Length: 244
Image 1 (spheres, rainbow, N blue to C red):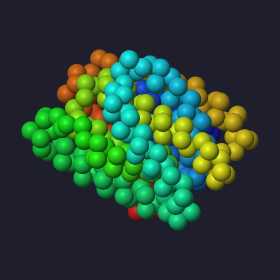
Image 2 (image 1 turned 45 degrees about the vertical axis):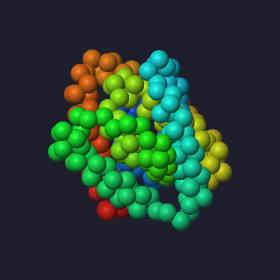
Image 3 (image 1 turned 135 degrees about the vertical axis):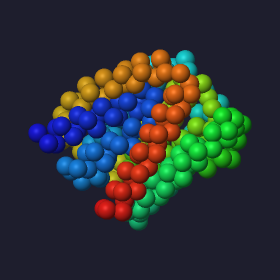
Image 4 (image 1 turned 180 degrees about the vertical axis):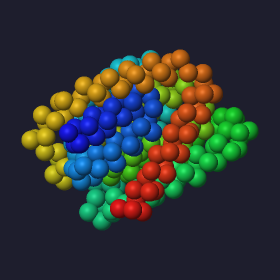
């Protein structure tokens, strides 16, 4: 009962992340790690992420900024390759502390510098490739690519639906690129597919809950909510990394 309760909650968070609230995706593995190992949780949830990606991208298909996505793909590919080649050298806890620290500093800066937060930054290819490389790496290791992604994407001040849609497309790309490496590393287990199928239901529900919620939120409130979620997730990641 404990496993299934946590698994359903984690799957629902996956769906929320694909519905346009990417910070929730970083909560999925830590939630499931309360009952099983983080590596097992990451492998078990990857098919759920991919299933949710299909509906997330379809839902936001008219709200994706493909120019930003093309920049992101370069970094995502690089980050995934780095994650694959260093999978046996880097501990999950080190990565959690790193991305938690990045998200913590950024979110606090974004919250307490209101004037700076109100001014949209231009889309810079160099910064985009750098931060999406970090996001691709951290997403590969622990499905926690949201903090680095938001460090780059939030200051662009995109319309809320475009931000949500572009984020969904970027993370769909990240997850698709993980399939072969995860299989090669033994993190995808055929015997767990029955569990995956069941978890797809709460994940799909989460996609449409997030979409409907984001659609009615004013832009200013949306960005405040996303930033506070990023702060909460970052603190959680730091705590998990330091306590093991």
